[in-house]
Length: 100
Image (cartoon, rainbow, N blue to C red; front, side, top):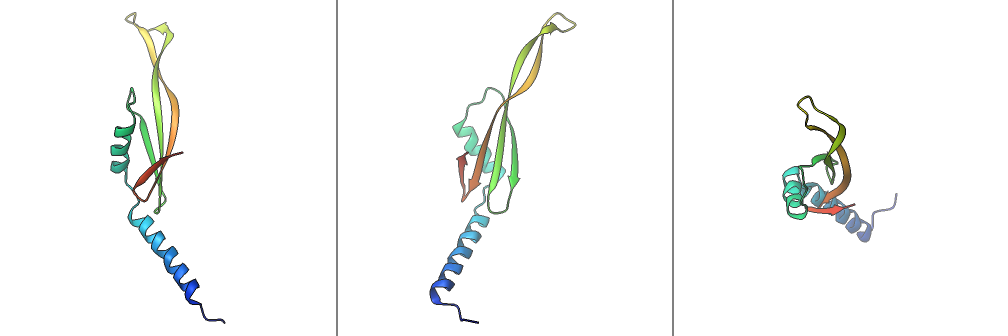
């Protein structure tokens, strides 16, 4: 078996350092909520789902819209239903968020 050269060892250490930094700086849900509240102005509160992959996180943001339907309620008011609107996806890596 050939001994490892210095450049290969340096490359392996560099990759390990990047993986450890990604793991340590993986942003949490509170960080995303702070970021999202500064960048978006939704009409209604969206539903935020987080999938944590240890080194990065994926955030799915689903907006909902209230729509009136032709039926009326028992008291004569127009009936309203809530339907899912658009969905946005973000990735959190190295304490940053990127909209996909």
